[in-house]
Length: 174
Ligand SMILES: CC(C)(COP(=O)(O)OP(=O)(O)OC[C@H]1O[C@@H](n2cnc3c(N)ncnc32)[C@H](O)[C@@H]1OP(=O)(O)O)[C@@H](O)C(=O)NCCC(=O)NCCS
Image (tube, rainbow, N blue to C red):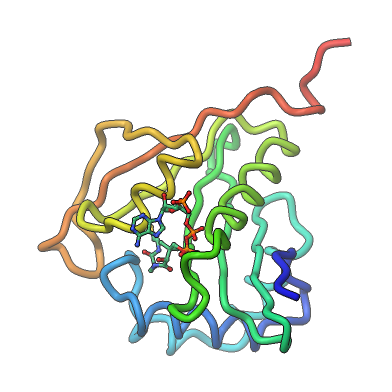
């Protein structure tokens, strides 16, 4: 059975493997690069997994297939200002695409951000990404009008999208 779940703090090796596969397979979808992240020390991956599992600062969700193999990933990161979150690192393995898994990953981040009482979730998507842009639109994101060069390939343009959130349980008035 395929399941979308939060990462465990101990799963840094799987996280490293999947993230590097994403960067190698879809270089123009991400601001970072395989060359950069393949050099990161073990301590950084341990910290990413730990924070993504437990923290209120970030939340990482993975897709695990029926054989226990990881085929999808996304992270929500609370912004420095604290009122919102960024959605980053969304990737689904080519063999697992077209089954609604990315949508479940995005909705997991939206649910986490809502639970945290955050106001909005923002992301950057390459203008030419014709699979991710419709996905985000289906999940309620709209373009903010902001754009910038893709850091890993400045010949391409990234667009910012935002999804405003309804007040979560922590913010309901009594
Ligand atoms: C973008 C990506 C995550 C989509 O993963 P997925 O699991 O296939 O997506 P889903 O099956 O959940 O699709 C959900 C919606 O996204 C849209 N979508 C997904 N793939 C699409 C495609 N190739 N063409 C058009 N729309 C697409 C559709 O609106 C779909 O809704 P529907 O099923 O009701 O039609 C995947 O293609 C991927 O990993 N791409 C490379 C990395 C990437 O671009 N990451 C985003 C960085 S910003």
